[in-house]
Length: 58
Image: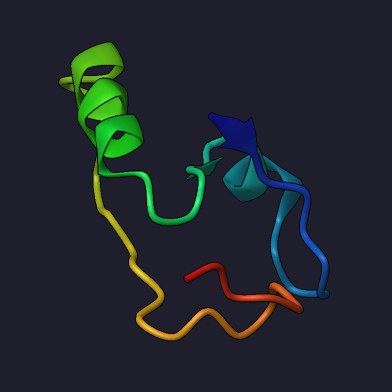
């Protein structure tokens, strides 16, 4: 799991510090995240079209 460093303005540092970014196309990482933080996850945001990767793995 990766922590997020904001790449645009407007994201308060405390919010970014509470954000977890998972590897692309890795459902097991999501399962492990829920197992690691069972009572701490407020939302899951999924980007249906990866727009900021410069590359989309098949």
